[in-house]
Image (cartoon, rainbow, N blue to C red; front, side, top):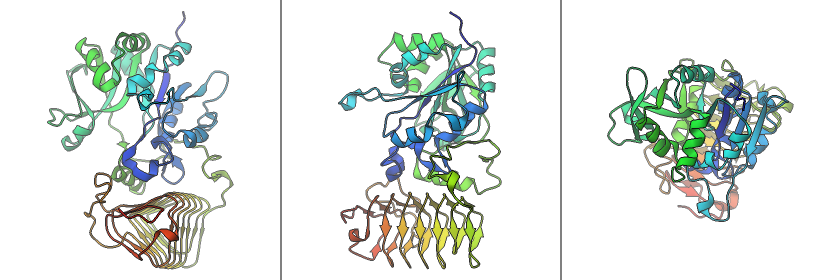
Amino acid sequence: MNIRSDALVLLLAGGVGSRLNILVQNRTKPAVPFGGIYRIIDFSLSNVANSGLKKVGVLTQYKPLSLMSHLGSGEAWDLNGRLRGLKILPPRTGAKDSDWYQGTADAVRRNIDFIRANPSDEVLILSGDHIYHMDFTSMLAFHRAKNADVTVAMMVVPLSEIHQFGAAIVDDEKRIVEWEEKPQVPRTNLASMGIYVFDRRYLLDALERDRASVDFGMHVLPHAIAHNDAYAYPFTGYWRDVGTIQAYWQANMDLLDPNAEISPQDWKIHTNIEAEGRLADRPPARFGARSHLRRSLIAAGCVINGSVTNSVLAPGVIVEEGAVVHNSILFADCVVKKDTVVDLTICDKNVIIGEKAVVGLGENHQAKNHQYPEHLYSGITLVGKRAVIPAGVSIGRNCIIHPDSDESAYSSLNLEDGVTLHPDGEIC
């Protein structure tokens, strides 16, 4: 059988991403909007397309409809045609939770027929929920030069963060000699990026050899390392796992920092403009005579008559006269009414904030959310999709306003730091 030299790409895009809280209540993590006009998955897909790779299988699972609509036929990334293609691989699950993918290796194993149907020398496995720019041709060249069975993209991170990642110790040849998955007592600062190149035959054998191996980092890689088959590909560019609210907010803020080395335009990041709230049909942004804008990204279709500083606004956002938006991220078609203040807040799509309301009140950024203290702890307040905040309401720090909460949910004009408001008016 002839094996083509182009790597087959498997893009893992089925994760729940629960730490993003209400932002993933109705969508999978890779489908979360980012940077005004993008989705998180756009970065991995664009890296694939810009590297000249032509065959991609996207493994979905958790609430995939929004993601599937965004991906379409792959045309936005030039991944459709006779010799190229993007294939959405739907979840292969039954009625029980145990039928869901148990890990990264398990997800790939359950789609092993896609690998067999698309012969290649290597299989490139990616996560669809990272913000980064990478040329995969360099990683593939490294993999081939080492004659490796598996190559892991790795980068140096602060020791204080290594407990979030798989960690490797390497020799002078970049061969991985030891591996620890999320070590609590770090011995290295070299972290896995969740990007793997496998020799195709090795991957098929590994998946078939031990069906109890469900995760690459915990099971498959240690076996390869024990047989001197794994190498670490060094990466030094911008890369951020946006799996937490704080990391997601910071990556958006990095877009506003000229020194942050993130530039979707220079990286040639593509998105589906037909699916993103009909971005292609939006008029240019408009700015009123009394508007004030500083260090912000404003997408097409926005109407700004107030003040916007250090913020990212998606298409169709309206900021009325006297309103102030600061340090915030507003998804498509949000409306900020007159004389309202929105500070350190992430608003999902179609949120309406009434006149003279304040979202993000006070200086107590450390008052953790009562219900989700591990999600909201740095002052950021979340407002869910289609929520309506009545005129005159004040909402504190680290609060959560659930999607579809309207005026009837508010029994008070003051929501204190750390509270969560549900559509039925329940406060946690």
